[in-house]
Image (cartoon, rainbow, N blue to C red; front, top):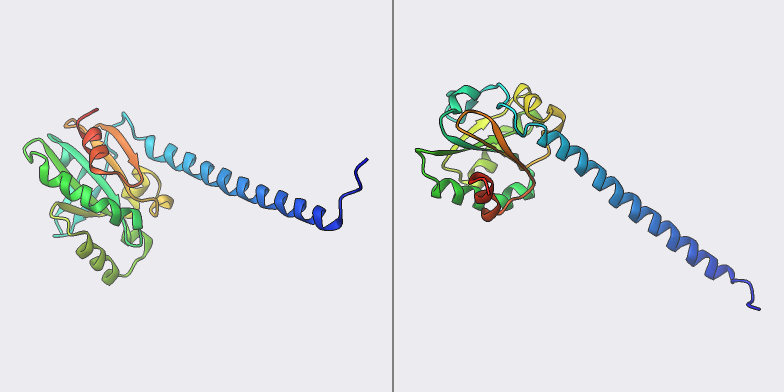
Length: 186
C-alpha cells in the first residue's frame, strides 16, 4: 500500500494541471482566432473583386474596375507588422519578375484606418521600398474585403484574375515560391 501523496506532490500536480490547462486554452484560442480570420479572408475566393475607390500614394484615384485586364496581386500590409516586413522582399521580387503586360502587383497600406501617424506610415513605406503602386486603404475598402475590424490582420494577399474575380486568398507571411504558385494557379 502506498502512502498518501505529500502536500508538496499535490501542489506540483495542481500546478502542472493549471499550466497544462492554460497552454491548451492559449493554443485553442489562437487556433480559433486563426480559423475565424481565415474565414473572413477566404470569403472572397471565387467572388468578384469587392467594389472600392481609394487613392494611391501619388493621389490618383484607383477603382476596383480599373484593375481589370491583368492578373493583380493585391497585398495588404501595415506599419507595426513584423510579418509584413519579412514578406516585403518576396513581394518586391515578385513585382520585379512579373510581365507588366499580364500582371500587376498593388500594395494596400491600412495605416490610415488604424490611426497610425503619417510619419510612421512614411517610415514604413520607405522601409518596404516598393516600386509598385501602393493604395491607401480606407474603412470602406477594408469593410468590403474582410471587415474594417480586421485592418490589423496583415499581411493578406489576394490574387485577382483579369476579369476581376478573386482566385486565391493568402493570409500571413508568404515566401516568393508561395506567391509564384498562387499567381500562376499552381
